[in-house]
Each structure stands twice: as C-alpha cells, then as structure tokens.
Length: 85
Image 1 (spheres, rainbow, N blue to C red):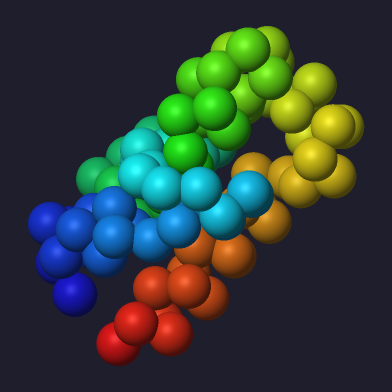
Image 2: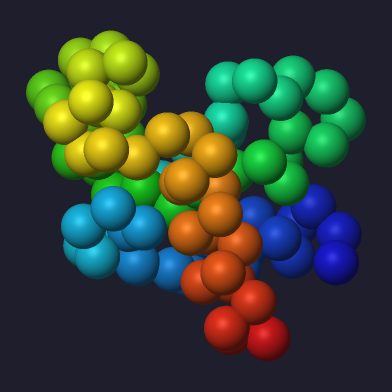
C-alpha cells in the first residue's frame, strides 16, 4: 500500500478514541522520516486539536486523560484499517 492509499484509508475511519467522524490525520510525533505518513492515527477534530485533544492541551495531558499512548493510537488505527481491507 502506498502513502496516498494509506492516508485515504485512515481518513475514512472513525476516530480511534471516541468514534466520531470526520477525522483528521494525526502524525505520531516519534516518527519524522520518509515513513511518517504511515505512522498516523485517525482522530476527530476534538481529539486532535480540540481543547482536550492531543495538540489542544498537551500530548501528556491527553495520554493521561484517555489512558492511550501514541503507540496505542497507532495500533488502533492499524487494526481499523486492516478490517477495511
């Protein structure tokens, strides 16, 4: 699967935290290379950039509130994408 197909698949998912739609693509912060588009999670606007979102408050605050790490978000996204194949 190429990057474009992966990002399209992630964009078609429900939010992996709360189930809302539509979603935005959240890039996992630890990956900053040519594969970073594959290290992404499907998050709704509230969970992504809203006041309590991963970028709205702080990553640490988000992780404490949701009990989900960046790796958990990635795992949930990968599982959801593979169910659509």
